Length: 93
Image (cartoon, rainbow, N blue to C red):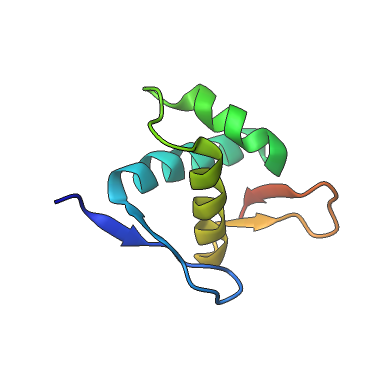
């Protein structure tokens, strides 16, 4: 049986259960990209994460990125840049 993880949501909404392996893969990609670029537009995140993945991703990359981005915000690892439009993300200092 595949290990699962329940994601968190920054606004206290219910998270989702997803594969722990997929969670770790996308989490590492998001943290790497935001760390290297400083700030990144949310709409550019899927292409940037896909570029750093070692293997093709099996599943809806955009869905996983959105779900895990929210989880990382809830865990205070990344944050939305205040006042940015379109939405920009960065690592929490």
